[in-house]
Amino acid sequence: MPVVAPVVFRPFRLRIVAVIFTVALVVLCAVGWVALPPHLRAGFTFSQLLTLLAILGFLVFAMITMAASAVWADADGLLLRNGLRRHRVEWSRVHTILLRPGDPWALLLLKPSDGRPFQVDLDAEKRQLMGIQASDGPRAVRAVEELRARHRAFLASH
Image (tube, helix red, strand yellow):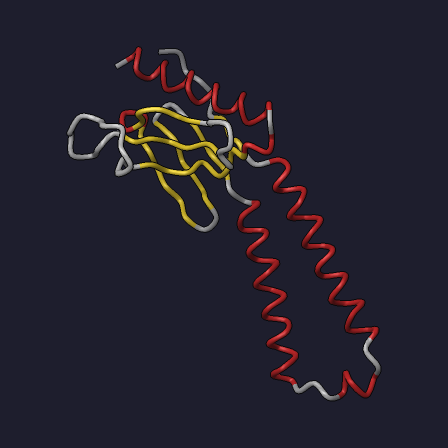
């Protein structure tokens, strides 16, 4: 099998939306704070200010974390980062890669790890490929086609 360079897929529109919303949220909070009359600002205790900053930090962290989702594909398999979680999936475990109309992101159906034959049912093991967002349109379709081609190449060589 010829050596194929690793490839990375990241959500394009989600990253743009996350950056815009993060900047807008931080600016709105800063403008809102400055717009408060000084006597109202003085009424906030240190712990209340820390609480407000913690809430703002959590919202920013959540948006950045979701936008950081990605799918790496190499000769051995896939590495998925969905938010804070990472999953390593070998090509031998992959049954199929789906991106159906109406799906928010691509989906990976996995063969059972105990060697049983794959059965299509609601209990089938799956992984979401949040790095490939359906909202990216043709870019997402190309990403899924590339992953399917790499999976086919792996199956042909083994």
